[in-house]
Length: 237
View 1: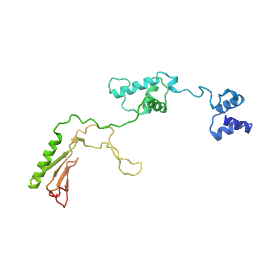
View 2: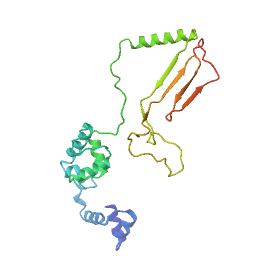
View 3: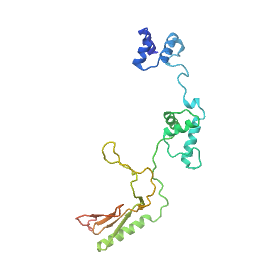
View 4: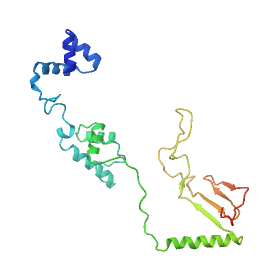
């Protein structure tokens, strides 16, 4: 109504001028002019008629919300025979899949509906530790005592650390590194095992008494780890 009042004050060509200056569409300004002629059509304290404005997608399309939930359930279930089957939960992909089953829903509409349904974007959280041995702490206390007993007597104590098997090749890894702009390191699209390189089990061996050790690299070479200072058993360093 404000835009309509301004266009009315300008006179001829006022609608075009106000549209260019404010971005308000011409049909909206014309509707505003109609409302100015009938000021009593609005209830006191309101700037829009009752039930005015565009209807929500979920109100116009009742099955929309239910079909969206079924897409999410099939993804969470991981059933390979579920139709449609999903590998990603992005709102844009959900929007495209909804359009395939005759629903008109933009990615923003999908995002709004997901919030209404109580969905949020979350990452995995480590919480399941499995069964605990009742004497777990006693086991480590026993091992720690054996280590100290051996070090005091200058007996060898070897620590071995390893990781799960890693694929060997130019595969994608999480993380970032500094590189020239628009020149990312190119890696393989799929993480299939390279038949020639196979997998590598990375591990390291550390001598606590000598404070030296080495780590096996992916290419099979060893990286020596040593320090000029010796471990102080008495000080517990």
